[in-house]
Length: 229
Image (cartoon, rainbow, N blue to C red; front, side, top):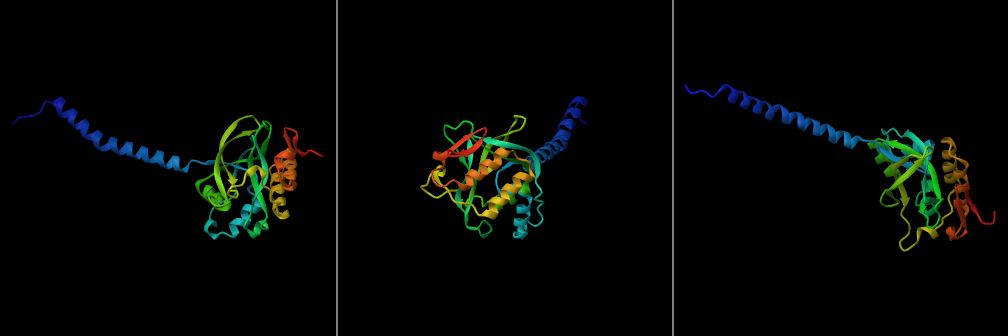
């Protein structure tokens, strides 16, 4: 009976073992990597009503689809978004907001020291979906990736939302006065997170500035104020 050399037999057996077990290991590792990639938390920058835990809870009560989602968001840090200012550019279609203005971030030009204060949160996949639903993603607000700087000067790549404004309108010239209760939701949220005084100054001016806000704002590191103040 003809036999293969022992070294050849051993080599074939090793190739067979690796084909069976090595492939399984590689597949398992790839699957694990995909799961980890899909479950990786999203950094989210909140600057408006989502600063308020009470507002998140109230929204959740009215949206049973997200009843099982824990909306106690994990805070990473307070921070600011440079080269933007706070505005109320879009008129809400929600009764909760009094059918009045809702918060937005407005890109600034020739105002290198302008900034929007808020909070960086780390979101789970389910929280990310819930926030997108609360914001009315794709029809009321749209997602935007931005670099937010924390109090230690560290930059974080974050997801945030900007309002979808009226067609043919320039965001920087739009203004809709916010509902008083909505204003208080944002203000209280800022208090809860210990945001700096500058946040509250910006909020006050943004909420009361009518028409051509760029023309009558002065935005610097000391806070946003009206020219006649």
